[in-house]
Length: 321
Image: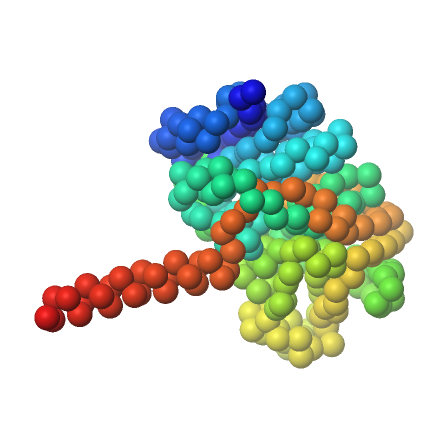
């Protein structure tokens, strides 16, 4: 019996990149033995609704778009309790999740990778009753993604986030929070916090720290306290840019379960999408809960590079002979 798959994509993501690759991608899926159901998202939450409708009717759900599209797909699958594997073709402006897993940047190469059907069991997160793929965050810059117009993202790419974020530098707001976990309990004023399973956030690598393992059952927790003067702000920025944990102004640790409480409602984002205003948040790591088709990892990336270098070396030697 022929296998069936749902392919849902955001036609506006990444300057509409999918439009020039769509036929090639579908051809790759067809050659892989799949009957393809194609759906272009018509607005927010459409990918989520499509996944809920088709999750138990198909053998594979592939999606293309930014991290927000992936978030909707993951949320839909978790909500219906499906074990259907996911294939992801990144097409957004930053693609933190894809970059963290060293996925191919070529859309057709990513489609071919999916057809290899090798499962990677990736951790995801539960945020109260919601689901997120790789990051839950609050504070400075976290509303930049969903407040930045899609057309502006398409025109300026990552610069659009920076421009939108710069507007907030003069309106830094702090939140008094109590953070509880098995590893650490702290109460302080924070301007930013993130609970992540990613090697980059907002396109900035190493912001979540070093030695990130995306299926170890643990999140990387980063909490930035409110700087009291320009020197403390400089200390924070230096620590973030160098990815060195050498300041008392930033709390950085790993945890599978975190509770964050506040008297004031705090606006959160989940994978760059608005996650609601919350006074009580419980975040749990859902260990290896995402069945992701993935064969491109860091070692394979190095292997491909070594193969290219060897080929160049052989060509050079042959020309010299």
